[in-house]
Length: 259
Image (cartoon, rainbow, N blue to C red; front, side, top):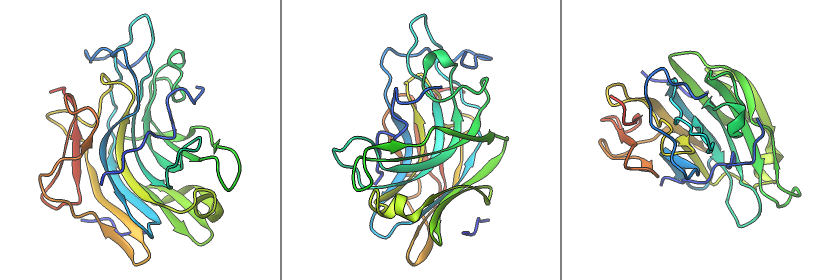
């Protein structure tokens, strides 16, 4: 496990629109859903050889989902870390990811409904390739999320790639799932992901979400990201969402349009 202190590979998530079977929170007025939904991202990543682990301390945010009209459109708000395999033209996506999920009611049919409660989750998928046809797990709920800052890690330990929340083991995939079926890790990511421009990305203008002590692991060990202080994140909806690295270069802060 790495120490807690004290590029951007943006892919269409394997939790692709419409592949999952499963009333947005409206305590305060939020944005209406737009007519077009697709995987959208606000965060960062790193590509390279020899990668085998990813870590971030992600602040819980009870995200708002876009307000649906009579005709429902896809919606969700996720925060996650991932290992990514090489991406080819084959069916599926090579990804192993986990974090927080805020999901809409079942009529929207994206990630599994949890009565409007944000929860921890994990997901694995491989493309069609050396291990056969495209395969993906269900969108797996671990537990309801708690407020505060929580630690998400995926890393190789012995003969498996393990997923940890708050330094407690939660899930694993075999080495062959990563090193043969993908094959190998091509990138790591630290992301907020939304399906609609109206879904909340990150925190608010007055209270940004924290992705803290962001790290990646390779053969020589764990390393902090050291990005240019004040630089922006990769963002597929720059009109609504913002994100910047702080003075340390290894913490970044996403936020949305609300005060």
